[in-house]
Image 1 (cartoon, rainbow, N blue to C red):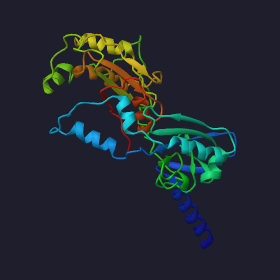
Image 2 (cartoon, rainbow, N blue to C red; image 1 turned 90 degrees about the horizontal axis):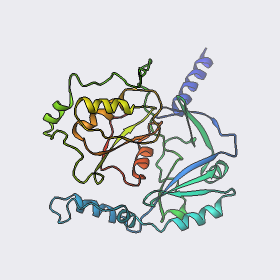
Image 3 (cartoon, rainbow, N blue to C red; image 1 turned 45 degrees about the vertical axis):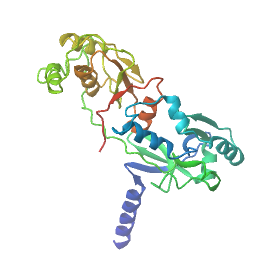
Length: 313
């Protein structure tokens, strides 16, 4: 009896230990052809430049208050000389072909490596699963991302992501029975209780009178995850019912999950205050705010305002 209890307790301990933010360790990776992505955060030449610039344009006492800068200016502020040392290090340490992609401002290097090379460099990767999602990480569990930067790169790289970072996966809170659209129009969120006029009054906003001055220079974006979908016909009907114009939403990412709810609410009610403004629906299937931020910021012209009503617990 004692031996059985000991084995049971040990089994429970190992199971709990293997869980990282809900990710459960399953087994080692057995396929050597898998490509694994690592993200190298390159150190800027001047590590204080970006923070100084943010402080300058955010300080009401500054002569440059709200003088926002361009993407090219941001790229110069975070400019790094770490890319070439990184390439040299990878060429000397790996045995398989690899590819490198740079972020919009060239301060992050996304490196796609053979899984065997990753294991040789940093330790054996293992598989972690949560619901229907799978990731590959080190068996050591959650550790600081800067811990794994090799000595040769410490003057050029701040941290490496994709080894011991376990972002929590939002629980699936969608209703069991999806409400399907009838004749291309959904019936949810028709504004009977709190309509756009109420919101306009609450926020002291002017009613819609056409496209805002300087249309195209100002824009707004709506975040969506977990196969959330909206129907353009719903938005058009909502705009017509409440005299909010006829702005067509640009879609970035998937919009065919069949989950009508959060996305329907967001894409309709954003025009209560933000009518006459260029609007984008920015979506990805998995709830991962870091990946979504990269998706949004890598747009040619990211929206000035981003509405994110999603969260995790």
